[in-house]
Image 1 (spheres, rainbow, N blue to C red):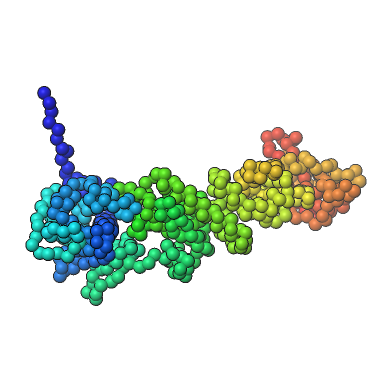
Image 2 (image 1 turned 180 degrees about the horizontal axis):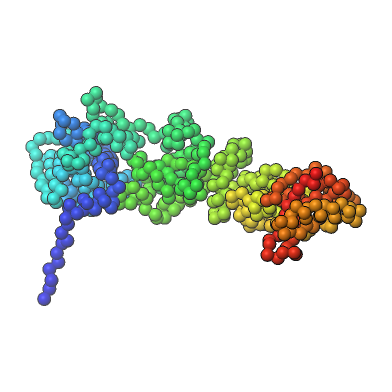
Length: 536
């Protein structure tokens, strides 16, 4: 006993609901899908007779009662219409036009169905450049359609007619149509016009991000409009193997914490999405790019890119272009690189902790606070093969006063600085690092000279009285500033208050500077503390 093989039955209303809720982000994409089909039809006609090149949109008005999009592309014959438009999932460009992949935009054969998100009925009238009678196809959202040949000799090409659904007419009216046509088709390589009561409006123009060398002012102005401010610089990017190119605009401001890199992405000069976050490396957060590609593949929704080997190569090559910009800027115009780092330093420090590649080429220009002022990492590792750092701002302030002048102490208390310092031996093998703290530094100090014993005891007594309520013991230590001048200090101390610690100092003069450490020898329950006072 054999079973009959049967075809699945498709509920078109269910498919349209699936498209509108789970594939397409908004009904607004209907116009993008129609522009895509029209552009591909024009590309196909150029292979047939070299003609075509215009798309014309007539928005819905009270007088017309319908929305119409016309193109002078290759058109369709009666058999092509029946075969193509009645089969969900068949792509005209792949199966009928036989265009190479890089020459067409649509791939999945579902674009026309997006029109059912704004209309219950779609009427398509067409005449093929290959010959044959004019044909009319009428499809309904309930899944039915009909095809008829008409006697009228239509111009070569295709027109799509939509009568709006009750809840979607605003998307077909002039204001929305003009906005959507500009958003999606502003840079198409064909002429796109919108009919208005005042006459035709040309939508298309040359993309300033594809030929910055010809008109650099237009490229900068485009970036200014994109960012809302003048970019710090403009970086040209390209990856020839996939026909990918564009511009990266360096942000003149630091993006919000946690913000991801995002690029405005075009495919075949039609907008794919305003914010695509995987065409550049994650570390390139400091640029906003505008990219066009002929070789990258979109997902079914045409709102993101397929993660494949081509996209991985593009990401790698465009990232390399941004790295070259950083390196060349450092060589040619170090003052501008310093300006760039000053704007984006916190974000760069955050990323170098997790991106070894970025760390190797950007860390040398990052800066840290030291006992010798603010110093670039490149200069720091060149001058000091051994780098000492304090983990917190308070510890840095306390230890800095007793740090030898021929050594360097880095303040690791600022965001990501301690992590950056700990990375230095991996980035610069000749460098060693050492973490220091107040207790360890005080233990390195010497007892006061015997000649100053009386002053030291007096100071301990006075300090002990001040700290009696804290149950602390006081020990005076001296800092050696020179082999022959043991115990000498600066005569004018700073009072840091009870919650901070300054440099431990001693002085032979009774009212000189002094510092002490409160030890746990008398009260092991308390952590070791440090304090400084002006004894005057």
